Amino acid sequence: MDVHDVVVIGAGPAGATAALYLARAGLKTLALDKGVYEGAAGRAQKIENFPGVPGPISGAELVRRIRAQAESFGAEFREEKVLRAHVRVDPKEVWTAAGLYKAKAVIVATGAMGRSQFLPGEERLIGRGVSYCAACDAPFFRDALVAVAGSTAEAVEEALTLAQHAARVIFLAPTPTVLVPEDLWQELTTHPRVEVRLGARLVEIVGEEKVEGVRIITQGGEELIPVAGVFPLLQGTAPVVDFLGGEVPLGEGGCLKVDELMRTPVPGVFAAGDVRCQQFRQAVIAAAEGAQAALSAELFVRGRARPRTDWGA
Image (cartoon, rainbow, N blue to C red):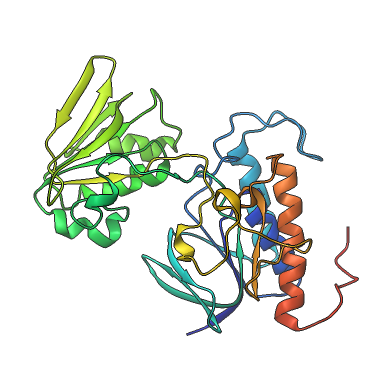
């Protein structure tokens, strides 16, 4: 198996900028991300204060531009959800539903849109009807009724994967609108085995030994829907670090701790952007941290004591 110099997990402003710097330095760089609409920047409707980019511009378009610039230098981007990572081995291992990637160094730039609290019944029923990966578990729900809760492209894609196996998929979006690519939304809303319910907030997962239903709240009130499985792909404001499995020390609030060079306490693991829980969450700050993390990762991979002097402006 090929070993990448650096795998970047997350490809918003921080991760995409890191990939740009790494690829321009001639390092074999792979960036893994769930899609341009998944992060905080990608879901921003209008950005007007990113230096050198006359606004207004959508966050998704800004991210696409940074990625395209990184790709022009040879960086590779793949839309894959990282399920787990082993970063205390050499080379480091990053697992997605598509397989295993190995790297000499890893940059974590996954942002802070994860959930810090479970829904009632969720944690108790994980593995007994509660799942977070349709590619992994969809066959277990063949000919069953399942629910997907979320309002992102990831949630839509998971619902479409489940619809290949389940008898029916109920898509519960807590918001009145869903910000995803138009063609993806069209595919979901026209699928014969998918029922879309907007403005439906999942509040409880019901069942004793296994999932038996979901309790939701809509404008019409509370409702209990009997299902055999549920995929709660909801968002919050917590750092997205669950895939690290506790291998990297966390600070207050579950944030990744780094030094002034964006190095975590684990050698060869760096972090940038909102996953660090800084006070000011701005795209330009995340991009700058991504550049810093890339500079440090390049030093680590090549074993140099000093930064390069020919990076250019």
